[in-house]
Image (tube, rainbow over all chains, first blue to last red; front, side, top):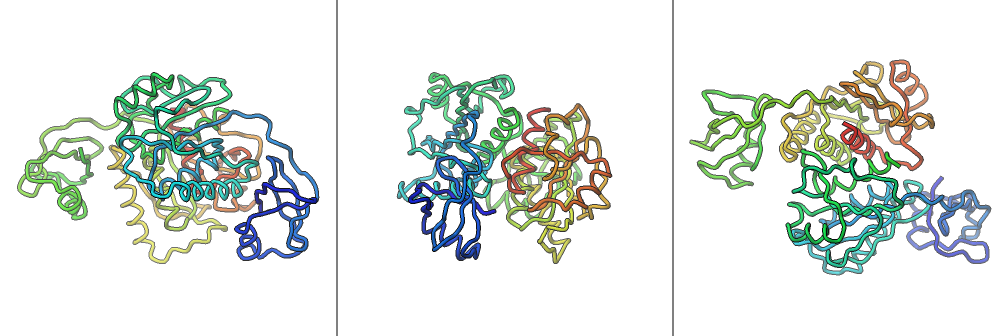
Length: 225
Length: 225
């Protein structure tokens, strides 16, 4: 069954965005009295299309039991690579995405708010498609010096060759991991992060593209949950 | 340093394809006496451009010590998804890719040889970019009934909810894993594979897109090496 996120419940009817209604009517060709799944406040509901509204029938599933929280810090990438990372990281259970400025990111952002809206939309659609009960939070773009992180803090290093992800993973509530740009962080940048408590790890000998790294790490974290 | 694959060594000169020469001259703008890396017969060499040929200076690295072998069986996907899977699986160390026909693959192949050539090219470029010493083998497209597999044999199931990848992974030399199409294998197809010795595993509750699954599994296999 098709799933949509709603942030508004009024008189037992879920309010959806115009984009969602377009999807319901034009893409899915759904009709009056068809049932759909609605996620509202991290819970799952069964709803029915009635008089061009979504009537709440019942709650199906409650908030997710508290699971480990994943925070990804990623440099600005080209549009197609950024879309890819946002979509795949959402599928694989990311909770928060922090876009970061780095010296070797060559991508410039002209209209930041427009970009943040577009990124949110990609995450929302991927959340619906992969049947999540939450949409990842995308924060404002941050400078590296303002990055703090929570829980176990990791940075993917190109210089450190000895510490592996396996060695540092532990039973923590939150993992923050930072991925470098193409060409890696500069020495100064990596030093800054290490001084902030991020552990530099190696991902092995083969060279992964920047956009592959978050998927690689999240797959492992999910596997080790 | 830029890396190219050669399948031919003659009078101490490596022979490269026209595509590679185009890349060397026009994309990389390399000149006479520039050094490049050449992979020949799974070994790495240092070469130098001399008289429009690649002169072999010395061997840098020998064949990879025998590592675990990974075989991916993947349904026919749309062009962009197939390119994505081939590129990322190559980065993550796949050794063999077997494209398979399945009931729910909706993609039709018109010119099979042209397609196989294109797929090979994607894997070759990804091998160069990720600094591999081998290019994955892509076999002819197979019917499910003709699929045998080697070593530990796994199929990603949508019906089996109990056996996880973690439970079945062991110290084997080869792992063959089969990914289903969008909508999953039919019951008959899954039964056929199970009868052939493929263990049906679950990838957890969240729904991953078909093209995400190989990347997810390979990331874990690489991590568990």
